Length: 339
Image: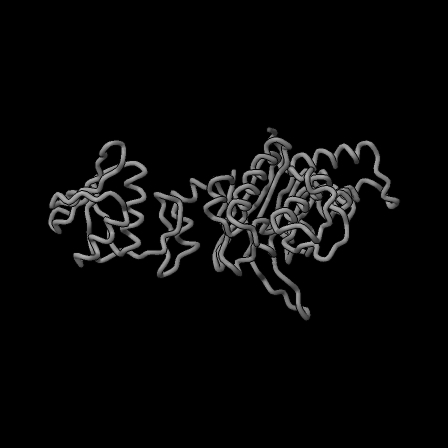
């Protein structure tokens, strides 16, 4: 994996729109941003923070209000030059198309094939590599309009890979996909960055997946600076709490997920460790309990111990009652109206 000189660099960039002679700023002046080969960058931020605007500006689809974007050491590239440096996958589906998947993927070679569109051996080899990388060989003879959302996204990714550019940008590629498809796509992009040595930048709302696959995160705030760095560093610095702060939602640094259940008024002690304790704690928090250490719960007199009996977990109440499932535990606690 070569992560030497950056493929893309911004300098004094400010994004936004021009309307009626006025400049409408979407972001303040951004710090220097760079995209390097072999790296996957996830662009995160709340709705309205300017993710799509930044992505479109970097891809050359709209001009910056100020500053420059250098790609391959140059700026002000023409459209043909840009098409050989950056491939872009947007959220829009190719609806109603009667094209075969094979033909759609081949369109990715347009920057290289000339105005006649004649495919050379080099073009065909690039198309073959893209089909293999995106794992769409079984879809080649299908019509584009018959594809599911997940299949369509993989085909559009293959078209972008056939374009064979150093940089690949994707705008919310997991939108409209079910959970397994979202996981597979993010894992595939992570692999492609390394195996094909591409610089990949994608915008997403999938914070949990981004924390697992991103080499770097760019985090935009609706009214604030852009934070960038290794995702684990940003978590430890408390950046995610600040960016997504809501009264009823908090980011848990310990688990890397958002908590939707506020701290409960009822304290309960839990003695145990491992996966059983983790899921027991989740269930108790959902029921309005604040899970504390065994010592802290001593005054409340409510302590649950997790033991093992014949290879199965058992939840032991302080009075000695033994329960064999989390459902039984919750029913018992709620029946007693603990406070």
